Amino acid sequence: MKAKATSIDIAHLAGVSQATVSRALRGSPLVNEETRRRIQAAAEQLNYKVDKNASNLRRMHSGTLALLFFEDPTADESHINPFFLSMLGSITRACALQGYDLLISFQQFSHDWHADFADSKKADGLILLGYGDYLAYRDKLEKLVAQGTRFVRWGAVLPDQPGVSIGCDNFRGGQAVAEHLLERGCRRIAFLGDASSHYPEFFGRYRGYVDALQRAGVEVDPDLQENAESTERFGYEAMRSLILREVGFDAVFAASDLIAIGAMRALSDHGLRIPQDVALAGFDDIPMASFVNPPLTTVLQDTKQAGEVLVDSLLGLIRGEPMDSEVLPVKLVVRRSSLR
Image (cartoon, rainbow, N blue to C red; front, side, top):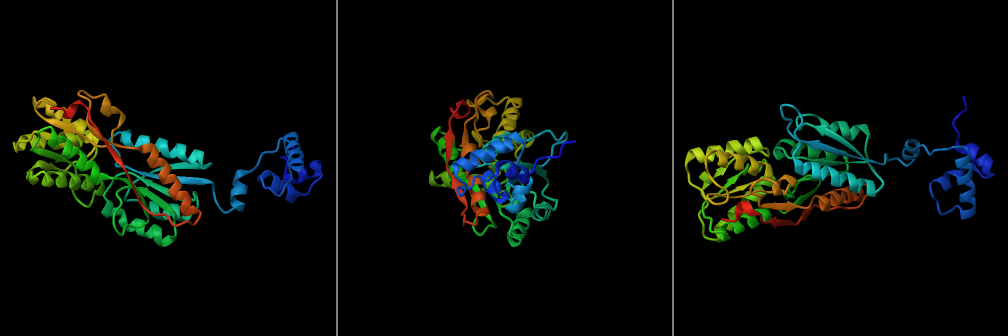
């Protein structure tokens, strides 16, 4: 069986040293064009392929980034928030444009993922993506910082947080929704979503909603807030609970589109029309938002820009550059669900 060609074989055929072959195959400017063409011709003749793993090992990096995705599993383990599917696509494309492979790994917050990836050297850096209890895994982020792991995360940008975070302007998004509903004449605006520091993205949206109400001179009624995680089922149950409590409301701001879609079903089941009886708005602008009936008013998070900024920030850290957390702008998308 014929042995695999090596750089020594190319050097012999091209009449140059092995070091010159290595430099030419790396694209080094130290090799003149004529010599480079001769080496490439010899490599093609010998059917030589560069061993990327060995090359990366010599340069002390893998050429791979790891995306650790966190989301609570569903009963059949098939559910992924459509917003995160868009993020996965944009991050993958951004990595490809930078010449990096992307390793995607599904994780649970309770596991020791911070230790596994810090020690395994599978990737040059980590991107952390997914919603979850921020206070429950903050200490793991602190351990990543202490270990010198290069990582960025998608999430709320908070004071004194560990590492670099990229997130959208949740506060301004919440403001924009509440201002829009107030302009439509709504005064009893319910909020569906966890409004605590455990879920800082939702909490930022809630604080923006509260700020808009207060500036408009509208009382903030705590009875109009119902906790909900980002699934249709939680949205349905939260909306149903609010209806059965008979607190009275004329609009609903759901902290995510999935919560809003679940709320839409609960409102329909109880004979409430959207938007004639209740105006409704969500957050994320997932593809489904424009296809439900009525189409859903929501807040657009630019996943393309988010993916590019996450990858650029991580590569900056890998190069040893100081990188700061960044808040990306959002945009209110008005559709029929809120047009009373």
